[in-house]
Image (cartoon, each protein chain N blue to C red):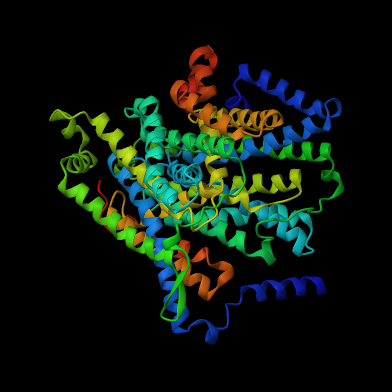
Amino acid sequence: MAQHNDNAKEAARDLLPVDIGQTFTFAALSSQFLVGLSRAMILFIVSAGMSFVLGVLRVPNVAHGSLYMIGAFSAFSLSNLLGGGSGGFWVALILAPFVVALVALVAERSLFCHLYEREHLMLLLFTFALMLILGDLVKIFWGADYRSIMAPDMLRGSVPIFGSPFPRYNLFILIIGPLVAIGLWLFSNKTKVGKIARAAAVDREMVGAIGINVSWVFAFAFVLGCFLAGLGGALVSPMVSVSIGMDHDIIMEAFLIVTIGGLGNMWGALVGSLIFGLTQSYGVLFWPQFAIVFPYIAVVIVLLWRPRGMLKAVW
Amino acid sequence: MFRDIFNGRSIGPIAGFFIVLLVLPPIIPRFYTYILAVIFVTALVAMSLNMVVGHGGLFQFHHGVFYGVGAYTLALMLTKTSLPIWVGFVAGPIIAALVGLLIGAFCVRLTRLYFGMLQISLGSLVWAIAFRWYSLTGGDDGIHGIPMPSFISSSNGAYYFVLIVVVICLMILFMIFRSPFGETLQAIRDNPERCEAIGINVRRHQLLAIVIATFFAGIAGVLFVVVEGSVFPDLMFWVLSLEIFIMCLLGGWFTFAGPILGAAIMVSLRTFVGIYTEYWTLILGIILILLIFFLPEGVWGYIIEKFGSRPNEAVEKGSN
């Protein structure tokens, strides 16, 4: 009986949040804000890719996380191949997403494209199978060890912002994120290919009827989405330990972000990523043990308030 | 009533199969007894999922949560309280069904993909809480060494207990499928708008189906603890839920027995492929792709199409 009481006390003690006076200093709050923001940028790049594929092909790509992981591992290998120095990192950063895009193209043209006429559940299951296969291929090719990449010299170390040290690399991410967003927006709205892709998302039959090869549009959309996943993976590689569990972690987050943002909506992916990143970083401040629960709670609240996502879905 | 359910032809093979299962444990190695018990438990959870997916047409993407809740309920009752085990056996499915009712009530408001995604969100929330609440649930490690009464703690004892419970559950599920409720559920799966038009409350039927399915998933979770003696948060992780989904597909989700076959194939492959290589997920992915391209009706569905025997045809067509 006494033992049960002790267990209960221990459980309660674990649940208590941190000491409030110490936690909510301006330095801590602003530091966590920036951390959350940089995390949100990575999430945005990955989720935007997934949202794009979801919008055009109407299927959530479960293998998106695996491609993100391949991006990170490729960046690692490429930068090692090129000597491991700063220059090597920049080249790896640029090349890795193309490696991932190539993998995506091969998977799409050889297998995926034959399923476009089938029901959507089959497409979803194919992406799940792809995730399983790519996951093990990464294990075979790179092994199960943790890898790490060093950021290039000019981005190492930290700068003091509002009294707390903030990593320079994260600042870099904070600049890249909006650049990607602008680039995607310009692509979708100002280029011919982008407009065709958007049209195919809304009405694929019509696009086919006016003589455009819809299958190629899908291939392009899929490859572009996966390119973004690879870019996200390459960008995140100096910030985290590159390992084989990365695909599982990111895919659930991307999935939920895309759901609360509005299916296929790029700005929705941005809003969703901000919510996710910031709730997680502030969760760490407020209740470290359950920090990962906060984004899920935010997702549940958003979905109960707006079941179809906050912004308009593309279809 | 039993004549109605098991028409003359098929009762022979089914009874024979059951007798074979009964006499196996003393004559086969303990490892195989254990694997068979795992297959029975997995078959039950796959069958419970198929109730909402195959027969109900819902995108239940996170069924594993209810399986895990049943398992954790029993595990927590046995390790943290001194209540007798029968209380745990009954509480597991009930709590799983309550969670199912709660999550289901939110999800049935939506359709198709949104249903699935909301369920994944809510389910992931449950998983995250179990994963992090270390002092209560053992967090990442789970709970191990759960004590079982002696008559089911042995390998053979667990086998027989699980077999009896699973067979009873399957019989109940069969009766539910053939009942007016089951027929209505299939009608809703095929054409929800028309059902609404003739006055059927689609949401209430779907919710009831979810509650029943999660109840049986809870029973499967309880049986999992009996067989394995431990629980871990992976039971509620989305990858396992998708695996259960694949089992239904692999077996044939428009048939009654399909998921059982799917579960048997998956567990056997996972065990025996696992002996030769650590890249089981790669093999599973390849199998899934082969399935999508060549056997979309599932293995059992394919067999029925090719070799469906006459007397059963009317019964099978009725279930399709």
